[in-house]
Length: 375
Length: 246
Image (tube, rainbow over all chains, first blue to last red; front, top):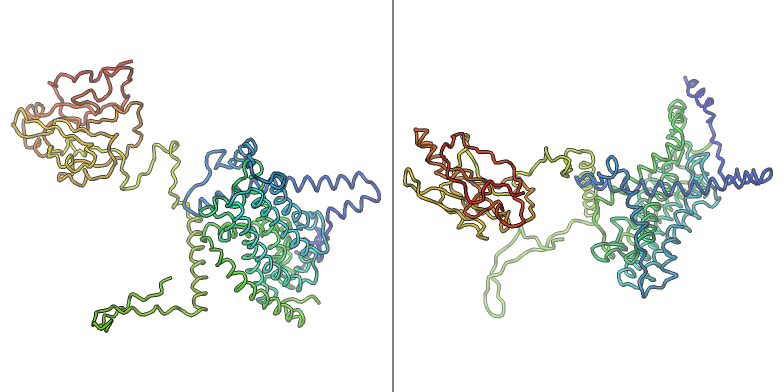
């Protein structure tokens, strides 16, 4: 009865174990034989990241505007192209040709550097995210640590931008962002550690492969779902999105840390925010929802075989899109938190929950008390 | 959050500073326990998310209108107020008796009702109903003041012109008694003589701008005479009325 899916699996070359091969591995292999092939792989990786950023920037901003409109009984952009699909492109061109104003009293080098620092962070993380078994640029063996460390660096750009603008709104926004991101980093990392405990590896590709029997969100006896919720809340705060967008609260701080930015540099901050959202969604799906791994239930071979028919890349995109949708849904539903409420939520609610959750996860892992433990 | 329970007020007399005074005792609001408050908060958030998802999934609730494109099929809210206009009965006759209640009610003095004595019945009747769009603030007071339900706020909102003098409208297409009075008259010849034509921009002064220097008169919507009664002997046209200045 299980023969048909097996034949399909064999035909697709996707047998019981997935063959992970990253671009950096290919480049390293090619290095021994042909250096130009190796360089070509690196060029492809660079171009791919560039294209991905462009695509994400253009599409996510459009999607956000459309979703925001429909959440509020509006239509959103409708004029540029059919259903306004070229609106973001037109806005980008407008931003590119706008004058780049630097305040007279600003700290010039820092002011110029800040947006690029801000954008560099998500770009670095994009390089280690496993999009599919064949599409990953580099698999760092300390993947989760790398992501956390680089992600924490993002606040640097914001602080620098706010400080160097020499503007009270900018500085207040930047200080708020600093306090907020550093606080929520703790909870987010605690939630990530739960998955690291269960998977027994920090490599992102390894974590995805460890979820072949089932995703960690529900395989881990409730600990996974708590970690998932804590991570979604904490990461929403980390990327400064509503309801945690006090660093750029329009009604209080004009535009927060990027008040004094215009034109291209403003668009870099804007782009970084949206790429960050994708990065968070990609990490959430990688760690908790199985990444590119199809939906598997233990030993149900027939069911798993049918699920394997959907290519891994589609699974990844689907899961990430769902998380992005949820984050946008939050933004257009919830009101903004006050600063003290924000700190209360982190230090008095999320942090204790995260710590207890991590402890429980450690006990579960010690006793091998999770669904479908590897034989 | 409310910290007082206003649903359970008690009225007592208390001794304050040696005097017996009536006081209102308001008990403290008994807050819900901490777990219940967390539950309430999460419930509230989920309710909000359900509401917005409902909006997302039901495109019929969208209120935005693609204005220049859907000009022919524009949907107006029931209480949309753009221009003042007369209501007509099925014969195309107005109901205005010239009582001037609207003129009195208008806070901006945007309405001027000119009446005359009918040549036939020697009754008081409407001659011209002049409304100034430029000073109107669309407060609807005239409509509410009208005892005969003769005027209403219409939906035509594309009223921009290049000269503010063109914003003075004559609302009544015919001068004469209200429909109720006119219908009592059986003889069609008498009825014809009872009412004179007026154009929408006609008035005691050249309201359509004709005759004003360097001004092109409004190419207003072609005047459609709502009167089924043929006017055989119209009054001589007003100064400049109906003359195109090119």
